[in-house]
Image (cartoon, rainbow, N blue to C red; front, side, top):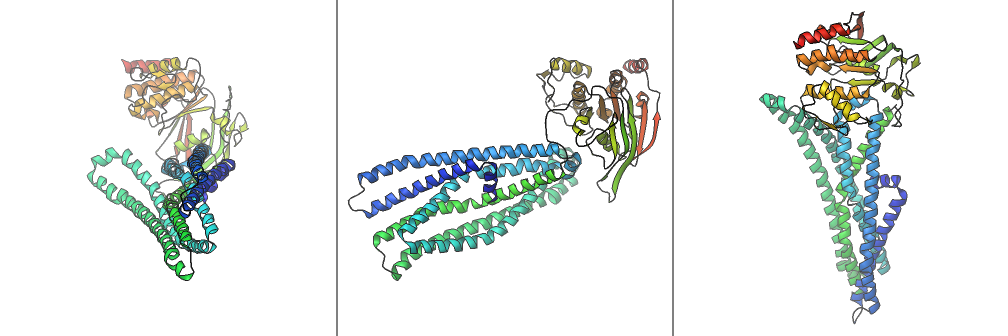
Length: 558
C-alpha cells in the first residue's frame, strides 16, 4: 500500500516498532478470545489461573494498543510535517516561470487539500493495524482449532479479496477524477471571492458563473465522489455477506459432512463472530485509504513535477551581496513564453542593456510589450533562454543567481504584502520603520512593533506604500518599481517621483521605474521604450536635479 510505503520510507524503525506493538495488541485480543473459549468448554467455571490471565490481559491489551496508536500518530504527523516543508522548499526552489504555469490553484490545492486528506486518514491507521493483527491472530487460532475450517475461511477470504479489488479499481478511478475536480473548484472559489464585486454588479455574469462554471464542476465532483464511495460501500457490504456465508457454512453445512463436537462448534462460531468486527473495520476504512492514496500520488507527482523543473539551490545561508558594484550588463538576453489568448509564443529580446549605480531608468511601452518580463529577467527571477547577464564582468548562472538576486528590491504591480518585516532583524528596526511610515504618510494608520505591522487592512495605494517601506528598509543597491504610482493619489504620485526617487538616486541606488506616467519622465537619466519585446529606442534624458525636483514638489504642495 502506497500510504504504508510512504511511512516506512520516512521512518522504518518507528513503523516496525509500532506495527509490532499493534501485533502484540492483536495477539492479546486473540489470547482473550482463547480464554473465553476455554471457559465455555470447561465445566465448573474458569480456573484461578484463567482469572488471573484474564485480568492481566485486560491491563496489557489497552497498554499495547495505546503504545501502537501513539507511535503511529507521532510517526504520521512527523512524516507529513516533513512533507509539507519539503513541498514548500520545492516551491521556493522551482523557477518562477514554472510556478506561474502551474497556477496558484494547483499549488494551494496540493498544500491545503491533499495533505489534510492524508493526515485525517492516518488517524485511523493505528486502529487498522490493530484490527489486522486481530484478524491474523484469529486465523492462526482458528487453524489451531481446525485446519479444515481455516482452509474454508481462507478460501472465502481469497474470493472476497479478488472480487473486492475489481470494484476498487473503478472506485479509485472515480476518486482520481474527483480530485481533479477539487483542484478546479479551488480555482473557481478563488474567482468567487476575488470577483465578488464584479459578480454582484452584473446579474447575467453572476448567473453564468454559478450555472456554467461553478455548478458544473461541483456537480462533477459530487458525481465522482458519490460513485467512488458508493462502489466502496458495495464492496464492503459484499465482504460482510461473505463473512456471513462462511459462518453459515460452518454452522449448518459442515456438521452434515462430518461429525463435529458441540464444544468445537462453539469455538469456531465464537472465533468467527469475534473476527467480524475487525474485518468490517478494515473494509470500512478502505474508502479513506483509497482517497489518501490518491492524494499521496498527487502530492508525489506534484513534488516530482517541481523537482524536474527545479534548477535552483535549496535554501541555505543568505549570500552577502556585493557592497560596491560598477556595471550590470544584459547581452543578447532572450525569453519566450505563451501569452493568454494567443497561439504564437511571445519573444522578448534580444535585449542589450547596461546599468550603473546612481541612475534612474524609466521603462516605458504599451501593455504586453514585455516590461515586467524584462524586469524579472533583470532581477534574476526569470532565467534567460539565450544571452547572458553579467555583474562586473561575472556571468550570472545557477551557482551565483541567489547571490545576484540579493542586489534587488522590487515592488511588483501584483505585489504581496507580508504582515511583518520578515527576514529584517537589526537594531533600531522599529524606529527606522516609523521614520518611513511618517515619510509615506501612514503613521496615523499603521504602527510597527518588533517588526510586525499593526494592520495591513488598507487601500491598495496605502498597501503599496507599506511594500515600498519594506523595500526601503532592505536597503539594496537596485530598486525596481512596477507601476508603483498607478494606485496613488495625484499628490503622493508627485511625492514619489519628485522626492522619493531623487532621494534613492542621491544615496547611490539604481532605480528602474516601469511607468506610463509620461509627464514624469523628466526624472529619468534614461528612457527605454519597449515595443513587441524589443527596445524601440533608448534615450538619455535630462533629469531634474534635486533643486528642480524640490521646486516641482513645492509648487504642487502650494
